[in-house]
Length: 204
Image (cartoon, rainbow, N blue to C red):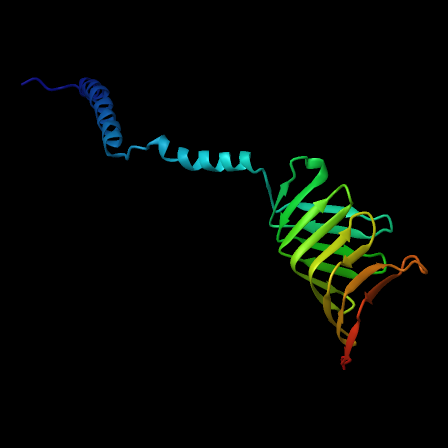
């Protein structure tokens, strides 16, 4: 029997591998395609179509932020969960769960929280409604059903009845105004008007 030379054995092994390895790779690829789950692109279309159609029909912004400075130097920041512009975007829009922060130059901070809000660019006002709560850094917490804040100056007004608690006790009134003191520019006053009642209970 003739013996095989090492060179011949190596050549035959390489030749067999050239045939066998591509066949094994083809078998593995075929198995992957057969086992893998078929993906239907149409599954996601209804959800995307509904969302896009809703946004086109009622355009809105999520978590909008408005920041500006009044002519007397106060910083006003307004945020909301969502906002919808009016048909004429230049006139403003409405906001859900708005929050506003007014920081006046004298260091006083006034925070306002409400259920709804309306930004009226024509009148230069932010109108808040629905369980409005105002908190001031001077220690007052006021509750009212409506409140307006000017966009171009430091002025916050409750057009209706208001109840507030503060350093002197509990105050009820027909109106509250937070504004710059006309007699002392740079200083700010909180004024209660119309049938004011004070339950005196000063903080200790």
